[in-house]
Length: 125
Image (cartoon, rainbow, N blue to C red; front, side):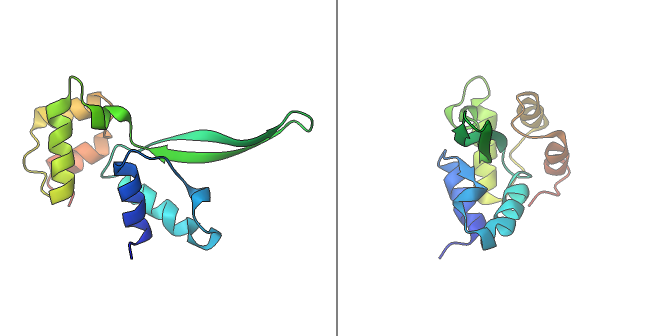
């Protein structure tokens, strides 16, 4: 059986959206921790999804959802750096990423500057 972190990682890498409401109430804290841990390794973005809205009572129920942008999977001008990042993430070996690759990933907002510094310094495992 997969851990919650492995489930979230698999769903995100499959291009799916992940919402905390998808998990049992007792597992939501662990799921949020797993998402925050994975945000250091993957370009995870967050946004809001409206689950229910009532115009009569003027209420809206929303849930935060997390996903990896399509450009991470689809490529574009940054394809080689993205492919290297995906391969490095799977193998946990970031030595193939050059400084140019890392700066391009930061410029495209696919990784944050802090993560880039950790990759460049060999701290990210």
